[in-house]
Amino acid sequence: MTSSSVSHHGTVLGVALAIGLAGCAQIPQLPGDGRYDGELCVATGTEAPRCGAAEVSLSNGRAQVQVSDIVYDLLLEDGRLELKLLHGTMQVDAFNAAYAWSNSFLTFVDPDKPVHYRIRFANPAQ
Image 1 (tube, rainbow, N blue to C red):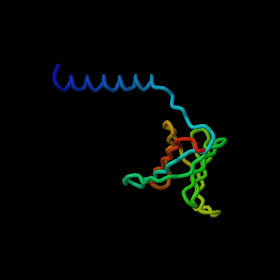
Image 2: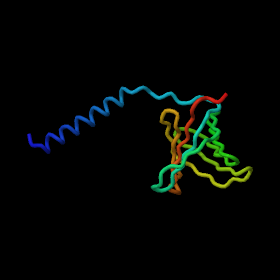
Image 3: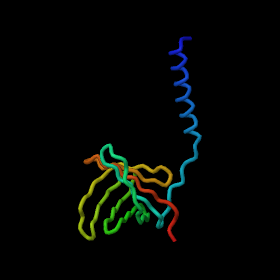
Image 4: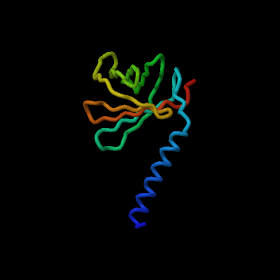
């Protein structure tokens, strides 16, 4: 075997092993309804995400994320979300997007802008 074919063979085995291990991984425990210590991270374009503490809650397929007087109201249904961004009682933005859970993180991207969101649902709030 040449060194390039050995390298390719090793890469194929590495990918196969990663896929196999992923299949054996535990299904992550998604957060249940309730209030959580939270964090909201927002990244625009290629910039690093900016993160800060947030009040987060889940209830009957709806998530709310509050930072000061800004509220992200998210309706979560079948892998899609409907987001309404409110400043006080005034709606300042709205969009629909796909979302994904990764352990206690909810992630989604605004389809009209290069804005990426990650919301962490940490320890249940007391």
